[in-house]
Length: 413
Image (cartoon, rainbow, N blue to C red):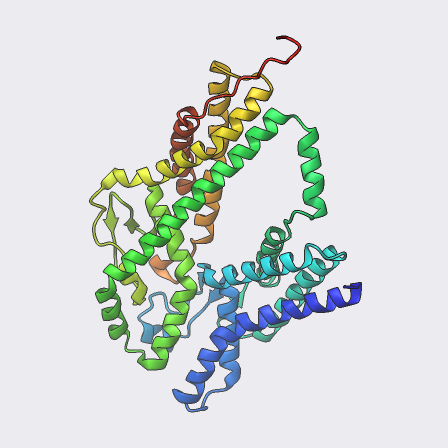
């Protein structure tokens, strides 16, 4: 494709992605506007609500201030005081990142790849600014302007960066050349640590997804009871379900934080962890009915999940690491120290990645005690670092992979 066609298609793809993201909440709200409210309210109100939901889905901080009548009807304390909502509906961000991956894959073999990526991301920035303009001046609602403009593009940019990694990508070709010409032991150690650290986090998140599914199935009765207590009607129930689906990736990260150890909070002063559960009054969100009411019967044994994940990752990367060590003559006690260094680096990577996920899944969800919701990123990261170091060290030191000894040359025989 030529430059113009590449730019046009990238801009159009970005437009479609943003339009679909806003259309998901807007379609549900529009049906409610027609059926439940009988066209009596200005439709622009629902448009602005859909845009605000889309912004929250990309991690944009929004400050709300309820009027006294609405606050009294909802039973909210601190009438008239502004409160922050920063807890992201991460389903929107995940969809945006996946769209970025698709864009990156489509462009990675094109001659004008960088132009297409820049045009696509610039289009998202421009559309985000236009959406921000449509909700500017709304009484009681104040989104962070710079976040509203930049965060959607940053999320999509992360996906584009992942999707653009291909065998023929010029940046990847240059990186491979640099690796081939660089100091092999250190590069091999860094690559092994990166794979082990990210593999550990991926395994813990996968187990957390299964745990979240099991919790929802086992807590089905409580979830249904909360649906009935809300009395939102059919359309209200549909809207509530869509919002909870957008919140589902956040719940998975909460479950991962629970597996790691520190757990998470659903309000100031509350704790949900394998060894302690202390829940105060909860908002009437049906999916919260799946939260455990008691500590895990396994107690601290739950922490074996991240340790075993790191152990498996250590075993997986040890053969290649041992081969790289053999090429430069590292063996015996030196190999063990080298393996411990790789385990430490892998633990740092795992802790940083898990802490970042916890940071994304935490924030403020409303006034009062709801200003503290989600896991503590620092605690989750440190616990993950310690557990990953133990597991990766055991996997690298006891992986069962022998260091191949260099064979004698034919000249020496």
